[in-house]
Length: 86
Image (cartoon, rainbow, N blue to C red; front, side, top):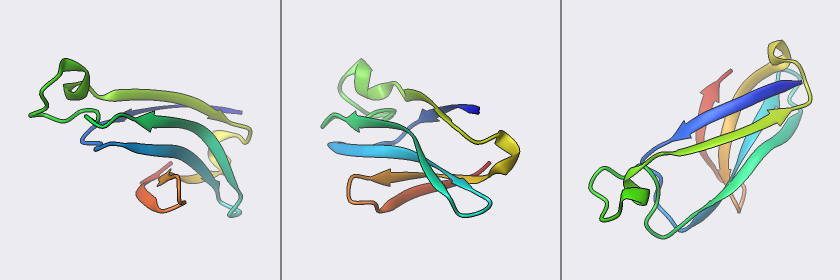
């Protein structure tokens, strides 16, 4: 398996998101999910400390790291918000 950790900034809320590991064979697996409050996370000019701070998310995927092509952050409707190479 593969342990995964990400730092998320400039994330506006409210939102429900998932981190998806996408294999080189196209297989998709949810590594983690979270919700973002109205104030968001990692917003530089936010009114609260919580909203100024980034969100750290950890998770895992069953496949080995060398079989993962990329990661996607998707919203609750399945829309891709961000893609990052593995």
